[in-house]
Length: 346
Ligand code: SF4
Image (cartoon, rainbow, N blue to C red; front, side):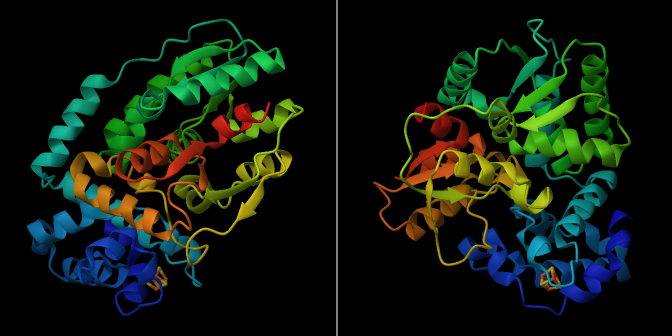
């Protein structure tokens, strides 16, 4: 079983309370089952009796997780509680035990996937996807920045579907989709793919490596690309609260470019919430939690709203169009992405 690769994490986490406050879903459900300790204890039981994998409460608990990877990132011993949950999802899928809401979602995602078509001849291609479809102002902001920089760009659909399938435990299908993208990318004139979506960045950089797929082009999150343009900004953004991305911070080892862009913009950074360890992304790491359990994502947004100093007036910035869309839909917060903030300051 895939969970067997995480025996050390299971042994450590099943008796440990240290990171329970970093389980986003646990913080809003108040269920012990939604904490790393109890999830690991469940999996410990499955390692002793594989028939327990079919327990519907266990399966639901595994798919309710927000997968922020905050527990792994802040674990003093580096135990991979997040990898353990992804392995459990793979085991559930490989045993034919995926619940109906997950398999329905997978069918829909597979039907949406198309081989990427690169529109334009420019060597920089902007990747669009489901999440920035939800936020057209993100695309307008990127366009404004590129016009200011005098740069033409091509457009291409990102293979976000591959990330969704991998997150849900369908690794074979995810790998096949990513291979289709890598093949198209290899035969294109594009030199740099730019994505605003941290999930896509993680897919094209880390998941591709894990799958043994070489993507022969430079991949940049939009914050890195905008920094590389070395633009002059006419306005300063003033006081802002920056919500870290699960993928850019916890999966990619504190990717430095969001912080660098905010420094270039001369933003006055204020601390958000009660600590710098928690995830305030509305389950960005789970990519599609709102499609499976919308009530959890709604509660996560309210949890973030409750931690704002002045919910209606604070300027909240996120790297992730996903997080912006979920906070806007489910809270009173005033949220913009890094790209929108940079465009505003031109
Ligand atoms: S990830 Fe680390 S801190 Fe969290 S439960 Fe496991 S051992 Fe404890």
